[in-house]
Length: 137
Image (cartoon, rainbow, N blue to C red; front, side, top):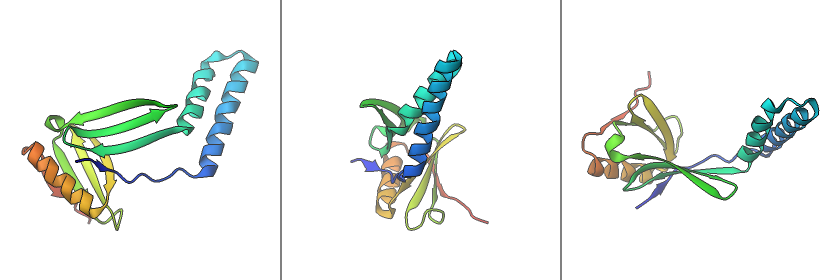
């Protein structure tokens, strides 16, 4: 079973602003022959047309990036994950899962039902994972 995180949609004005700024960086690099800024402009333009998915499955926790039809995986297997902290207040009515590996943490936003099932899956796949609710004070 796979559970997909809820991803907020990028606003149109942000996309347009990033494309304009990236095009300016490419133009400025070409005009001034300062090729150092060319990769930054290209990367900014490509990032505008990229897509990202958060996936929790039996294999582990994956962030799937799609840039111009090419997919890149950033997978954490269940054996690498140490902690899962849930936060049911910050993203109401959904639940945030803060999934930790060593000192690095990933934030996934899931529906309440999917979050409960994902936590059950995590407990089955690795019983050593510390699962707790975030304390808000």
